[in-house]
Image (tube, rainbow over all chains, first blue to last red; front, side, top):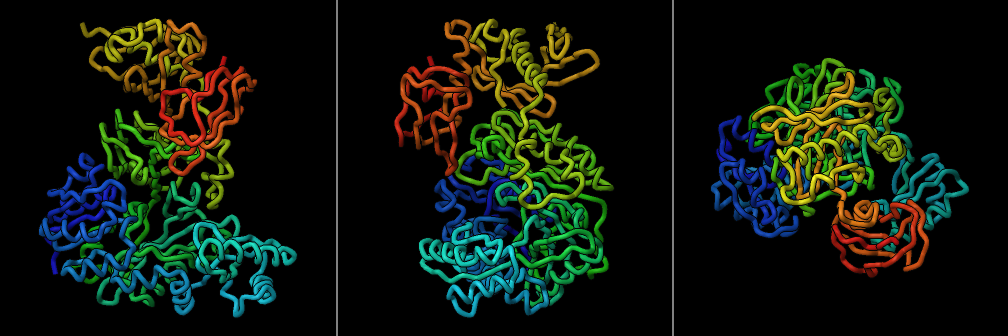
Amino acid sequence: MSITRLLIANRGEIACRIVRACRDRGIESVAVFSDADRDALHTRMADQAVGLGGTTAADSYLRIDRLLDAARESGADAIHPGYGFLSERSAFAAAVVDAGLTFVGPPADVIGRMGSKTEARALAETAGVPVVPGGVAPAQDDKTLAALAASVGFPALIKASAGGGGKGMRIVRHAGEALDGIGAARREARAAFGDGTLYVERLIEESRHVEIQVLADTHGNAVHLFERDCSVQRRHQKIIEESPSPAIGPAVRERMGQAAVALAKASQYVNAGTIEFLVEGEGDAARFYFLEMNTRLQVEHPVTEAVTGVDLVQAQLDIAEGEALPWTQNAIAQRGHAIECRIYAEAPEQGFLPQAGRILYWHPPSGPGVRVDSGVETGTEVTVHYDPLLAKLIVTGATREAAIRRALRALEEFVVLGVRTNITFLANVLRSETFAAGRVHTRWVDTAMESLAAPPPAELAAAAAQAARALRQDGSSGPHGAAGADAWRDLTGWRL
Amino acid sequence: MNAPKFYPVDFPRSGYAETHPGKINRVEFRVEDRRYVATVAWEGRRAWVHVGGHVFIIDPRDSDDPTPGASADLDALSPPMPATVTRIDVKPGDTVVNGDVIVLLEAMKMELPIRAPRDGIVARVNCRAGELVQPGTPLVVLE
């Protein structure tokens, strides 16, 4: 069933990325937009754009009824959910199919199955994929739970079964802390979720986040496209991803790929998906444990595209049309090194506070080995309503060192004025010894903030003040009729 | 007509800044053997400047304001974005030390401390707990 007109149920950079895929494929694209996104880049890029009304995500991009109306109105025959929003909502996938449209993603029942942490974990165990040691206690009394913690090993993590967001979670470092931890976790779990059921997992400290991209077709074929290392995170959110991972050896890479394909097959997976693993240790001594599966395209998918040469969105569309995967596992190779930096409108030195405002000037980098997937341009109003991701910079190099140098070059070329971004912060991460050595764990950014958010050199601050003063004085730009030239003398009131 | 203009500068040592009438948002610096290119965008009287991979926000100092550092105070004591006041730690007459948290704000579910930009005495408190405050309005005035 060929797709001729694709509705993109998303916004920002990923909507623009999918519009481009439609152009490359020679099919039509339909954008949807909220009231706040009337003038957004994705709204103007697509062949058609349909308003959803509303401003908040709940009133616009999360409205299944309005999205289906938009598909009908525009004559779309398929819907791509992008990432976030409704992409992992099985009810959405089901509603799209019920409306007679093609959903570019896995079947609704697979989304539901893999979306449940306990079901996904059980399935992983059946498929022989390692999971973090632990489990639900056979009984919920203190003694049974404490015994389970002891058998799982310390440090252990006591977690609420119904939990999320760190509530009802306690770290127990030795047997003596077990009863206190169990009691506290149970009280929190009852208060937050109305359910005090606990389970126990071994806490793996200073671990890395390494995930495997898979593609599976409707004919029962599945392949992996190697790994992405997403260990550079701030507050549990990825900011830099790379492939290959500097942490794992070739034998572990091979085993992780096989485990991912086994799980994809066991879950009867279809389309693009990502299997996330927690990794401890290094090289071929590294151990990996299944974390969860993301049943959609990932933000960081271009990293995989860069090292494998596979266009993942085209592959998703081919699979959705019922085509068989064109390659066997052996035909897919990982070449060179790719790094993605997520460009966020945020102030790292203020606890990564999201920033809003109008982009006065936007100049992305270019040149060899540089790709920028962006959802904004000069003049775009960045609002508080949605995720503050502005763009993704993806660089490639023959080696990891070359890719790091190229990423630094590109970040320095990247000029964004009018809204503060994390660009300088990303460069500080790439320049750090820890990153260069490939020794980043998922909590590292939070512990290294002092050096990563260091203030800029004073001479650059002086140069910036002089630049503003020079332009104001010669009258070639600047605020006419505002402050006199005197106001620009001895400027010191800069801030980052 | 299209001649560049040169301005003496003194960071970190002496050199010059060069502007071109045709490049209204660009300033080039030559300081001894080093070269910087600055890109500038204006937001009212405020300049956003990119130079050497860093971005700076430059506010003109108001030359007829008699209070030294008034502009720096204004910046430091105003909310950076619309926010709600959750706590006020000072009252008029209090002595504050550079770096003290004097007001705590909340915006986008995040805590945002407002700190004293210098040592001083609190002259006035311009906000109440629970109030929604806007950028450009100092929450506290120092003597």
